[in-house]
Image (cartoon, rainbow, N blue to C red; front, side):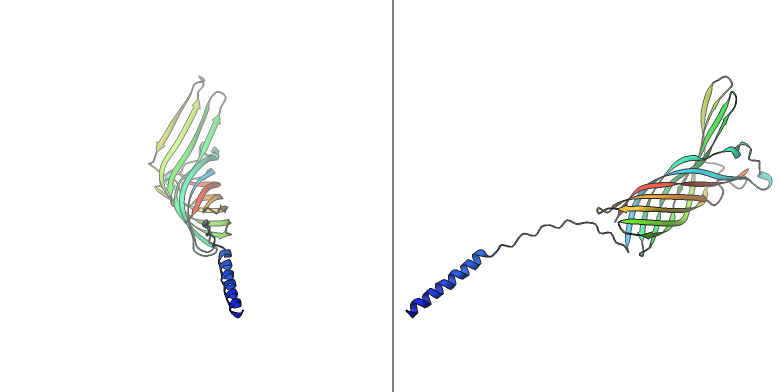
Length: 244
């Protein structure tokens, strides 16, 4: 009888072990984790491309000495709207400061319009430059970043362009375009100020909206010119930025 009990006990233990093994759950396959860009609040490098719409004007005064002349009709010039474009690089080197540098194709200018009893005359003048802005921005935030910056914009003169239109007493109209790069200062420098917002997305891309002010510090014309001309531009930059 004892032997029978021992045999039954052994069979029961074997059956129980088999049951536990059969009921043991199979390990689930791990699901691949989708990588999401993590924006750093302390160390970041990004590249961007922007376009800038500005209202541009100038300060204009007679040159001193032998070359000076009165302003004449140029005193009646008004604001001119212009588009500029740029690419650049930003690098955050601590929690609040961002270095910003790049290359701009910038334009500024002014316009004039005269309407008489039977004649009209108008022109739009544009000065084009290639520049390399260097700025320091105070920056706060991660997904939404606020920027406040200032810096210098060295610019190399490219071209003077003036579009003229007129009508005569015979009611005929005509126009011409004047282009030149002689007689102008080959190098000017401007102070730039900006304040704006940057919206960052999980993909690493972002959108920039940034009001900007440019103030030219030296004259557009050469020293022997009749006037001292310094450009002013205020507007808004729109662009895309990629955090890398």
